[in-house]
Image 1 (tube, one colour):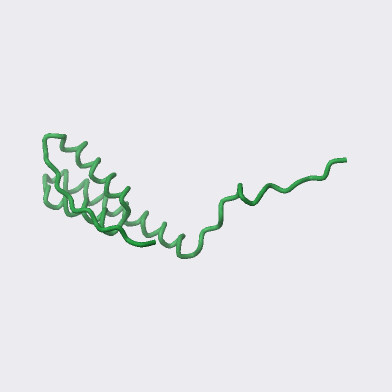
Image 2 (cartoon, helix red, strand yellow; image 1 turned 180 degrees about the vertical axis):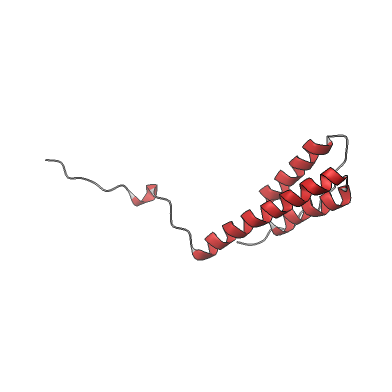
Amino acid sequence: MSVPTAAPSALREPRKTLREKGADSFNAALAAALTNGLSSALDAGDHTRAVDLINRGFAEGTPQLGCDLLRQAMTAVGGARTWTVQLAPLRPL
């Protein structure tokens, strides 16, 4: 007779804290706002505003968000444009 075994707790993902859930929500809202603003700036040809929005993605969001915005701008404008962005210093976790 075999005894049923429970799945090891190591296989379950840990529950997110309220702070982590809030950070995820904030990052999603920030990404949506910056992506929409970047699209508008690129459509208008306002590259100064586009760079400001990309910088905000790096500074206030995540490195991945900044990279995604930069990639979106490079795709829209092309590689001929030189993009200068300011990387935010790493924040301690």
